[in-house]
Image (tube, rainbow, N blue to C red; front, side, top):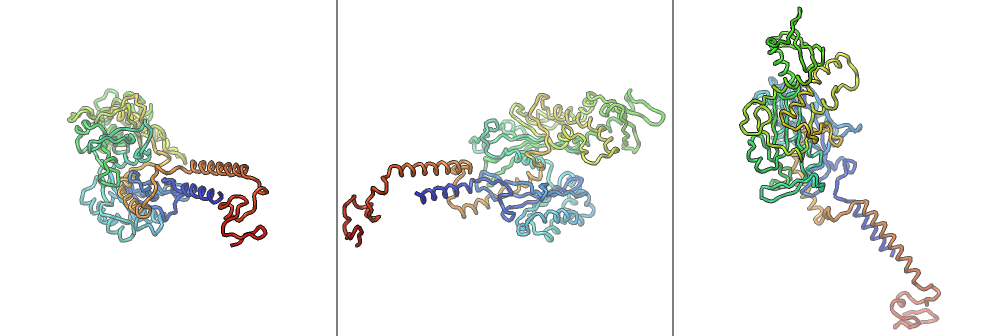
Length: 530
């Protein structure tokens, strides 16, 4: 009985050691983890991000569990340097020295034994897109040549490149939905949607969310389109079709996303365009007043009475004085949306660009960058107080909030009653950057390696459906032990006392009846021998 109980308990506790899930970095040693590096080369500087992921679950339906690496103080391993790569247009041979300091910083957080298998991606965005193609190639060639000589990170030909605005938008969309766990197999009926696959069958999976990111120079929008009729009407340059599955034949993880970028529609560019228009029209407006020293132009987007000196394209100084009229400010900004541009493929959003209809009753959207700063963290100046800097902030917050509002409602045509738009800086306490989406997409084939290794090592590994969670196994184990003890005690009560049992050899107890001699045994004084 004791041996039987020991066997049951041991078996149950063995099952609890594996439940098919990865709990986090603490469950694995650094040498069992995999690492990846992405450098975002923007217009104002370059920023490096270090990510890690534990071994793949072995389920072809699961993505890698990629997370941002944290230092000893539980802060993300991130570093930014200036200027941007585009500043090396005239001397590309110095670009590698610029990036080198970022790689020296990152390599200290990754075990040396993992360097050769750690993929490195250097991806440039808006700043590099503005310089000639020859200069782009020269900078990337210098990086590829020098970085591969000085560092052991895994590098391929397409790891160093200038990505398009469309690609950047897709990466950002992937990162947002990954952080929200929208690529997993949800059982929440409110998040499920039926998708028609390319083979004609239907597949039920999680509903994804849309993303709007308003930076300083541009604004991007990206959302999934599932209606086949709508997809036919969308120009190819506005659609991105891609798979996040670990095999090209995995059509269940194929997504078709509408994505577009509006250059000069970012908050800072909009302010500059607005002020230039204000200056050009000042000579003909009746509200312009001329003082003895300089012309004062009323600006409805500035707080009442606040002065702001701006410089014209001719290098002259002009004084703007706030009138603080929010409604008039929005009216003047609306002109910058270029809503009167002919729409070739209806319906359109801004500047004559086609935008497919959005099911606002079912869709959810997240807004980033200026949407977050304007709605939540207006001043962005926590910490050390500085009067001169603090006084400048109100000059632009009114116009930024007005611009954000008309872009959302007049440009992208979101109804004012729409309640599924949420501004965010963090999702699940994670800083969501397009670099995460880039790594997810570019490493999507890596699970095949772990799956193959898992099949070789564990040819009959149990599926998740057959495994219980630790909590339930402990309860089951406890119940089995109690039941076994109860049955054992009950058996003891049913058995006769030892005084009523004739003493016989153990083998005789199972082979003969009471007071009956066992064949082949000779008894002498109550004891038998062969």
